[in-house]
Image: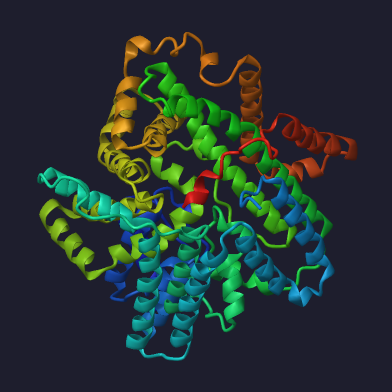
Length: 81
Length: 511
């Protein structure tokens, strides 16, 4: 899977979780850029991403990832394994 | 020496430390801070109790070394479980065992067993036991999750756990963000030191001028809760909201300012919380370090346990995707808010006032959100208009105040009695005694309180647009000096301080 393909899938997950079809994410996107992305929705988003890509984030990754770029890096490293 | 930062002897202690800190070799500054932290414990009469934080650091250190020495998941997990059990166990014994005993006795009473079925324990707790326990727990969990480097030097870990400015009231530190700076050399930086001192003056203004005055009104009503009702209850409760805020955020200004004079940048704990439009927003801006700790080490791990994942699946199957997801989150949030409440103290008044009541607010807010949206749409009201925001701020402040009634009252029954008395609408027009000046502050004191609150409000509004200290820094020298000296003398002249005055302790130091 290429980074672009990861982002295409991530856009779908974000749009579904936040119920907003206009969301387009990129490397620098953070919780501050999406209105409903609070601590409650963060964990739902993580679960949805895990399900979509068939991966599992570690607890450290869940709390330490700072933006969507870091999320994409982790996804790529896990699906590449 | 009094532990509180506003005591004269503490300020002498701090001044000596600050001078010596920049005179000694830079490489030894962290050792000096450790020694002063030990001295702080000993000089404030904690004597043998210092063994508790030392033991806590020892347990955390041992656990980290085990984790650092192996990649075996089972061994690492066993080390983590051992550290968490030991630290939480000590905290439970020191702070919560009597809460459990009292609750058990209460339940026994319901079944007709009279007297004290179980006897409480009398254990003295060291200063700031909750704060250093949470700081150490977070660090060890981060090491387990491989997002923080394990500390190799026990004494460095001891400084991180026992750093004296944070002992009384936090903030709860995160090693992966704040840890490394403690051990770096800090050359004297005039700007950092003056900024730190300025922030400390602002903290003294909040605690000594505002909080102590509010305290008089609060005590008048809450210490005689059978005698007051109607408007008096609400005046005292709003005063308590400002007392608690100025006391806690003021102590944070002193802690963060003091740390800045040592070249250390600690995390912010407040961000003008009374301007929040919703309860979740309020908790993102009030005691921020506790909120982050609870989110990272309680809420997220809880939601990712097998039990909650299974519960979520079951609820989604039964109630549909959206509602099922919501219900699973609400159940985890119940445990989260119970923990937040009990962190504040082993008493049901804290569990309710700072915990479960806020859980109920958030759940109701989530469930009623669609109804609210439809209502606004039907009435053609723009939900983002200024006056709607104003009403939401007032609503959030009112809801937080209901929690403060429990927080400050003697007990849950006393809080309920005060809320009932406060609802006596025929007494809402005029406070008991016929005048607001019969509640502990005479006319002059009340004027000083109002003027000081207006200064706080003005600065808080300016803070929303950026650093006020940086803005003042850009002014001409006479203006800068006039502003800071005016604040300093205002605080010295109008603050409640000095050995003859028995200053109220930092409210959060009990935790």
